[in-house]
Amino acid sequence: MEKEKFEREYLIKSSSKIIYNCLSTPSGLSEWFADDVNIRGDVFTFKWEGSEEEARLLTTKKDESVKFRWIADEEEGDKYYFELRIKIDALTKEVAIIVTDFAEPADIEDQALLWESQIDELKHILGS
Image (cartoon, rainbow, N blue to C red; front, side):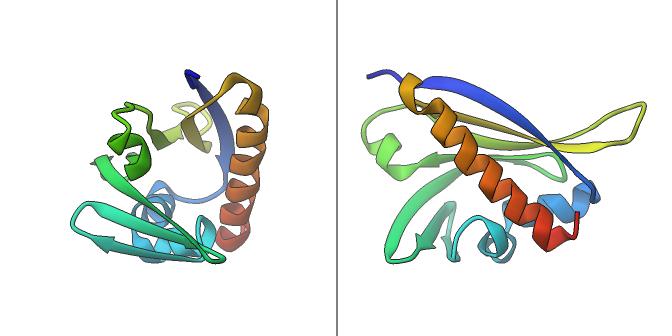
């Protein structure tokens, strides 16, 4: 079944530099995204309570965005990815994270709730 792309935006009260560090480094990601994160080359290994997933870092723009592809998707020949983009509103200077991900149509809401929970954890560690 084909997955569909979806995006969600979350306001965060923090600087883009601090947020970028949380999105792009193993130490930052292990504070909110996974229990533990290791990196070898461009492959990040995410560990959660006994399970482990690997993702390749596809692109990164300093203080702006990171894009990953799960190795399992890559091996299947799928072009799915997940991206975390930092957006700063030109007028209000509000900072937001825009999450782009893919899920099967029936799973989009569940996947979006999972992201919301993860971003809430990020806000908590940032004191946002």
